[in-house]
Length: 503
Image (cartoon, one colour):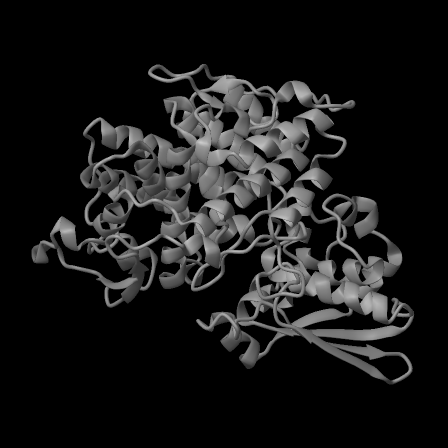
């Protein structure tokens, strides 16, 4: 990897394109590099993972609405369209990216990478896949595009913090998806450069979508970034240009939205000819909850097993010692009263570590539907115990959160439980069980099992097996339409009223 220094430049410095971060990203995207076997296998895992969580969300309101919007648009010219997940209908690729992006993100249940910024790099897959389907690309071409999307997003996330300035993390997704689409289509460096600039310019937004009473827009935000990336690439291919320099300009993103005119970053990017392996640094979720809660769910269910007598009646206080990020984003440090509100939205409870730990401790499990049910959140003994759970920042946990050493990095913490008899239980966990360094790391078998569990009762068995067979044949595919589930395979009484809008 090569570190690229990025700083703000005055207009009279005339920073050449070749010295701009967007150009350096475009150079990575325009170089044809075949993925390693390990990377190719992980791409398949993540395609299966995305399909699993999208399948489980097909009848949820945000997904139904996004699907209805997409299906209201015909297939655009010069292609065969992208396939809408869940219905099998074809639409214009930017709208397929929109609908499928919402389906993937709705349950907050797919892969993650945490460093200077947060990210769900699997959000790159819907827009790149939609364009691949529309343009008739092969599985091998799609594979290379997805590898680039992951590489660029993870490299940006390692170097540039957005949340510190209350900018939503999808500002790294627009450029990475545009770069991935550029690789998919074999575009030249200049065209990809222009598309990256436009994608970044149109996808910077505040983090209010993840604060307070969290709305359904949380699922739409990455889908919007993917849709903007598709449109940005289309404009760039037609010769249209972008704000330049988009990162380094004196009125650009860094100067006014991030660390300001004196900021300096070192962004790692692969050198020419170097394998793109960033996807291997990311990790998926075993539980449908914000990633920083994953290890806590595992610890809570362990405590339930080892101390079956733990309950609202026996616990007086619970303190979760954790990282700065966890405390202030999903913990009591956020100072969001909604994180303790039994009537809060699912999206809000998903970002409430006190709630998640309480329910996982009481139930010994975490379920993507049952654990968020209104009646579950409102249970009297749950509400009582929930209000006794607090998070605090621990300096060592914050240090380990930011550690660049894999074996030292941690996304968990230490719990201290005070009991009514005066005794205490103290346990800690560094990473989630499913993490590559966890107790039960995810491999292909676990990804497939996750898909089967989430698809049960939603898809017919034949459709489940068809999709899995197709996904695992990615590199040899010449028809990519089968990489979304067939709408005709939906089973049971899954009908829902399609909301009406303008389209």
